[in-house]
Each structure stands twice: as structure tokens, then as C-alpha cells.
Length: 279
Image (cartoon, rainbow, N blue to C red; front, side, top):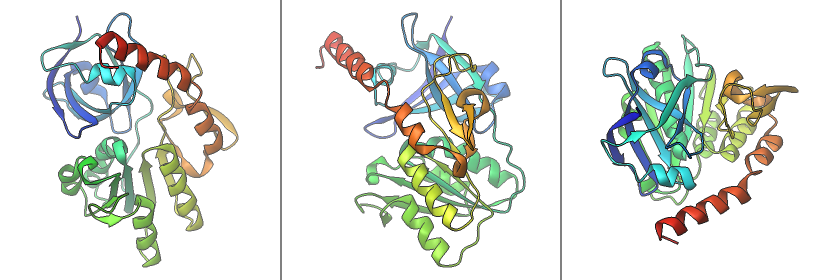
């Protein structure tokens, strides 16, 4: 018995949104948590952030980018098909109470996991300034949803095709230079983007939380694949995170560990394309 896909749509040429029937996960999940799924008996286990959930309907929404063998395979699944395993919620949820004025930055696919945090912050009575960015206009996701849950929304694109020509850090820098005051900052996206945000906010003494997307296998702290160094301490992203103080993360180590399975990932993708006749 698997987990049925109740809805599926391509939100960009590279990104897919799926609504999955998972009532036990939906009942317990909170912003900041994730699931680990497996497509079939022979599939690998991959972590995906919970982008949204509906406790009443018993559904969990995932948004993923087609970047490797498993995500390309998952993108071939259609409404009515089932995912073999869908385990969660995993990780520590982000306790979002009354903070004040919060800058929320989502880069690329990181817009999906920042969305439930933004929604929770807004519901908690905070003033939310959201900045989202993508490579170009047609890669911007969840703009309407983010706008509805934000007091202010800014959009950036790398190529200047929409919004500010630049990165999310450029927009945040402009606001800080204008004298805007924030009580904290949340950033979710690729490691280079989060590292850049933290360098900027450190210079302005702005507390910053990041959500790390490390390599995971079991999701329970047993395998050690997801370990990171935070403030000179070893942490396991799956049980201690995924949200950490960005100013304490060893970004050099995090980047190196993220690359360590690249040869195996390329080999798996090449085999998948050959088997499907798409190579």
C-alpha cells in the first residue's frame, strides 16, 4: 500500500508540485520539517521539504526540481499513481512565535520551503518582508502564494527578466542600506545563496536562520551522511535541523560534503536515461 498522488502539475519546466495523500504525516507536520520518500522497492531514499499541508484533507504538498535520477523518475509519476514510502514528519520544526519584522529570502526551489514559514510568521502577527529570486522569470514559483502571506514581496531574477536584476542578496542589501530594520532573517535556497546571505547579514548584526538541504539516507541520525559543523559542534541535519544559525555554519565543509557523491549521481542518471531510451 503506497501513498497516492492526488494532484500533480508542472510549475516550471524544471519543477513539479505534487499533492500526496498522507494523513498521518499531515496530522503532525509543522513548518521547517521534511519527508523522506522512496519510489519503489529498489529506489533510493531522498528528503524533500514539506511545502504545504492540509490537516483536514490529510494531504502533504511537495515541490521538487528535476536534478537527478530519482527526481526525474518521480516527475514521470501521474495523478492516481502511488509513491512506495513517504515517511515523516522528520526534523525539528521551526518554532515561529512573535518575532517582529522578519526578512524571508527564498532562492530558486528554496521558495517552496520558505513558504510555510512565511505563512506561519504572518499568522503569528509578524511583519513579513519576503524576497524571492530565480534565474529568470519563468522559473519564479509560488509568487501569488508568497504575496498573499507577506506584508511586502520583492522579486529578483539573475537575468533581469523580472523584478530586480540581481540576486536576493542584492535586494536585501538595498533595503538594509535604506535603513530598514529587521529583527531576524530566514534564508532557504542553494548553499552559495545562503552563505552569501549570511555574509551580508553578519555585517549588519542581523540574526539569520538557514534551512540546510544535506545528503540524507535514513533521516533518523543513524547514518551520519547529513552531518554538518555548526559553531564548532557536529550536528545531524535530519534530527538537529534542518534549520540552524547561519552565522555558525561551516559553509566550506557543507559545500564539500554536498559534492561527494557527484560521480555516483551522474552514473545513476546516465543509467536511468539509457533504460528509458532518452539518452
